[in-house]
Length: 268
Length: 337
Ligand SMILES: Nc1ncnc2c1ncn2[C@@H]1O[C@H](COP(=O)(O)OP(=O)(O)OP(=O)(O)O)[C@@H](O)[C@H]1O
Ligand SMILES: [Mg+2]
Image (tube, rainbow over all chains, first blue to last red; front, side, top):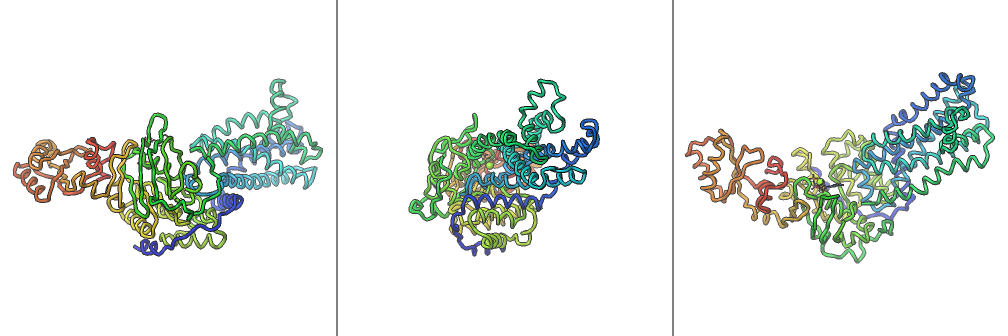
């Protein structure tokens, strides 16, 4: 057959100059972009829940919770952005678990590349996802009447913070993705862990009306701290303390889980 | 383990050892299961070497250890002159592996998969695309270059998976069951491909459950079972240990199978074994003439045959001859020639 004759003509190919770690990471980032091109429906998963939440809470509960839907939207929109980013991280863990199940990472692991490069690529994909989903939600919010009082710079700062939050939370699900070979289990576990964090927070309601024991939790819940900071950044009146508090969880998660990821991945 | 050590040049002096792979006492356990239980292996450069064994024998585990994907519990090995334990990164510069299950990104196109890997190896921009296109042409996949891999057939997937291991010509190519699940035509294509690669100087270590595959391709064969190497040699040597002319017989009346076995054993002087399904007999028959006479004796006794054939021993029978026990679960259907 044609294969053999052509294969015998295949010249011996030697390796070009060793690429840098950054170049390896960018290749994986390119892979994440290609995934958007080929599987655009993944965005549907990402934005449908937050869009439904926004509409449901604003119009069904908004009047009761804040006097009028438009007042509630002003309170709720920054929070739903945090929720979107946090839930997004679960999908990235599922993607990793799927890749690992298929043996794709075995090929990556047998290549002489920077070992963390595949994860850097996942992160690039995540950041793109956060940006796209965040922009869609914000646009819908603007159409419904949300007014970002801190203006464009407030929005840019808030999105930078969202990316930091997504980056930090992303490690949790990368570790889960490495440990669990069933993508749906990653999802179930992820949401089981995230639901209490997201609902027992100040995203949907002001904790002032909650019982003391619950408020004690809500006040220190990292998701609340993140939401307060995003609210401040977008609505104006943020202070440095809020920003620092919001960044504690992402920084700690990265410091602990990035080395864990490397260890789990290289363990063999 | 220092995995981030700077890559060692392929042509460093280290590289001069005569064997592409040299392993001593490799062991790997998973809980109570000793998947690989003390295997020594020497694979000379430039040959096709087959590791033959039934399901669960430890083939994949052995190969993954040699490809730096699994760390051995004990033992040592060098691959293209690089030590597996102390220089895994250097080993990775000299090998490529196509695993038992496709290691491709199903969402991307065939070309994108290859360009991705070419870039990871250090080809830039246009050079990466050119490398991908060369391989697509060589593996007869140009027509499917822009199709997503999830739409590929099993055979196309396998070819792409092997092409993905050849971005840079490896010193050693590991192929884990390269033809399992392929139809006979696709299997022959992959065989031709493997031969072509070996001709161009690549050392190939492949695993297989098919005796015929090892027989067709490999200069040397190691038979493993329960994590241990139970035989090694050329195909001819292994067959000589088993006997090459096997007579397979099925009686029209299954109730007379035992009677037929008695007659054959008496005529041919060997033990007859029943196939796993119990409907057929296999027995070593020195020559075709002996076999003919034995068949005539059956007919002479009025035993009607529904089927008979002369052939190579099955993997089961090779195992039987080598170990005195039937192979773990090597089905005759799969292993017969
Ligand atoms: N990651 C693992 N965890 C636990 N047990 C494992 C693992 N990998 C392999 N094993 C066990 O080790 C033994 C050898 O498995 P291995 O996959 O190496 O066999 P194999 O010869 O490749 O089989 P097959 O022909 O089915 O591919 C089996 O008993 C298997 O169950
Ligand atoms: Mg296997």
